[in-house]
Length: 133
Ligand code: HEC
Image 1 (cartoon, protein in one colour):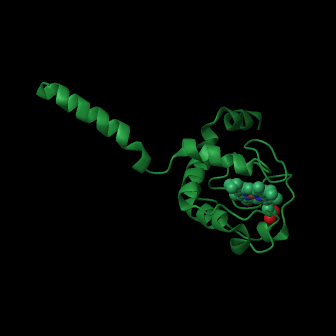
Image 2 (cartoon, protein in one colour; image 1 turned 90 degrees about the vertical axis):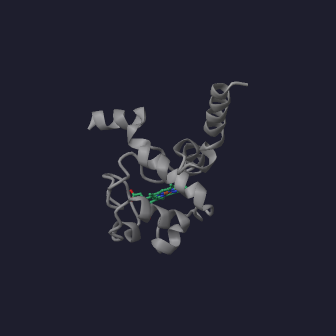
């Protein structure tokens, strides 16, 4: 084997081996979002409010959705930190919330899910919703 081929093989090996240890994985997050879809959708309200536009939004402010008084008065702004805390234990962060869901126990699952939610505004579903407003 020539040196060049050896280097090429080495580079390939690095490419194949690194993704697992890289940061949050939005693609994996999309699979975890299936759990949320029992109650949520990106672009329309269900049992829970829609998630398009979630990042930077103040909690309890989707027009037309009926929130619990607890969520409405929480004054949370949704970002990486607040979502990390809320998704760890919704009832602990917002006592009295109507989101009767135990939370996502695994830290890696939460990080991937948050990465997905952060990118959700770039999905065709959310872009279409923006166009309608
Ligand atoms: C059992 C139904 C249910 C499930 C499952 C559920 N939610 Fe919710 N979610 C709700 C409801 C209901 C609310 C409104 C809570 C309130 O008004 O107190 C809510 C509110 C929220 C909010 C606040 C939104 C806002 O506009 O302020 C976020 C963020 C959220 N959910 C994320 C998630 C994520 C992420 C998952 C998946 C891990 C999830 N939820 C799973 C029912 C659910």
